Structures are given as structure tokens and as C-alpha cells.
Image (cartoon, rainbow, N blue to C red; front, side, top):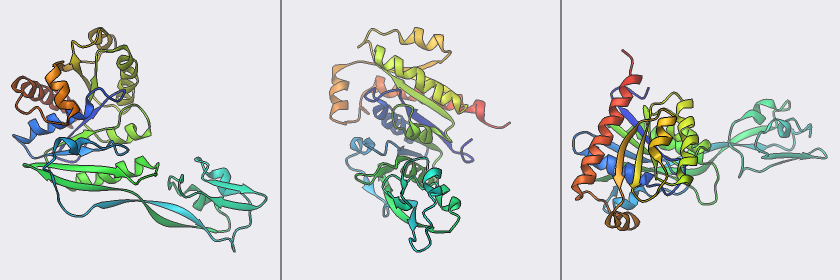
Length: 294
């Protein structure tokens, strides 16, 4: 369960392009009308939630995401190669008694440092990204963003989650990475429920199944929002019924909405859309109650 008195809703998807960020942004806008809300962009490789809030202003300085990487003291190294054997990510190579460390792909787990019998490996902090807070019309926003060329998304996600936790809010909406990779796993971890955004296409349904299993593997309640409803022909209802997953919302496909989404413009003046967001939000919050301690 998330921190006391805060509800965390993770918005995710099996594949990219389903409208996950659009749903997360509009849920946050709807929620902010009645409670203190923070929208957290954890899609750190390509964060774009802020695009919906062009007038958002930064609050404070960026908070760096750091990873401890090994640094070799060659004068102590015996060339035994145990560090290379211990590394799960191929960041250390030992050839002919010569050890080479590639800091760019090190995940900072520290196993090599602990394993070195000669204490030849120390640790140094490197910045792999940052989290930055913003404010827009009473809605708190927080964006995690990886450093250019870096690959350590999970470290940035965890840093953004910690930064979000220190921001006062009753409700936290997370815009999570698509798919079921390590990034997606870290992003939904600690949430109270997962809202999966799908579209009525066979491609979307294929990946939705894996996303459902990911959320259930963490013991999280799951609900599906059908975006672009009426645009495709895949039977989302039958798919969800076969897996015992409730559909908690439907967003009808309208060309005007598609155009607004492509231009990252909020649909806050679209009354039917915002009423649907209120309904989705209510159902998601209701689902979290099953996880609350008595």
C-alpha cells in the first residue's frame, strides 16, 4: 500500500500509442478539481505529459538521479576476474588479467564491489537523469527524464517516485512506460491499482494480456479503459471477460479528439469526455479500497 492518505493510480498500457498519456493527463485534471493531485511522468525515456500543460512553471531545481558505479584501483587489482563473473550486465570484462569497467552500462547494483577479494573496486556517483517539479493551475506535475544517451531508466524512475512522494498530495497519477519491461515494472510498483489503456486492435489486445499479468503479478487491481472506442474491430470486451478484467471506461473515437491529442491539447471543454474521466477515476479509487488495511 502507498503512503498513508495518498492513493496512487498507475496508468499503463501493453503497447505505445494507445493514449495512455492522454488518459493520465485528463484523469489528473479531473481529480485536481476536488483534491490535491500530482501527475508523475515516469515514462522517462520519452516523457511528454508536460506537453498538455504548456503554461506549467517549474518549482525548484531539478533533482538529479544518481547511480553508484565501480571505479578500479589498478594498483590493488590482482586480475582474478571475479568481478566480471559477478556482473550480470556485462559492464566488466577481464581478459588476460586486465580488468575493464564500462560505467555506461553499469546498473549500480554493487555486487562487483562486494565480491572483489582485493578491495580494488570503489564506488563513485554518476548522474543518469533528473526529476523536476512543476505547477499548472493548482495541479502538481513531476517529470522524470533520462540523461541523453543513458540507458538506466529504472534509476530515474525510482528517483522520480521518491521526489513525488515528498510532494503533498491526496492522489498520485502515474504516467508509466508502455509494455512489460523493467521500466514498466518499476513504474507500477508501489501503486494501489493499475489502469490499462487499450485500443480495439488485435495488436493492442496481444500486448494487453502481458500487461494484465504484470500488474497481477504485483498483486494490483486492474481495470481497462478502451480508448478510440469504435475505431477498430477487435473485441476488447470478450478479451477482458476471458481474463476476468473489468472495463472501467470507454473513450469514443472522434476526429476532433484525435486532432487535439495529436496537438497535445487538453479536452477539458469536452463535457462528455470529462464526465467519463470522473467515472474512470471513481472506479479506480474504488478498486484501491480492496487493498487498504481494515
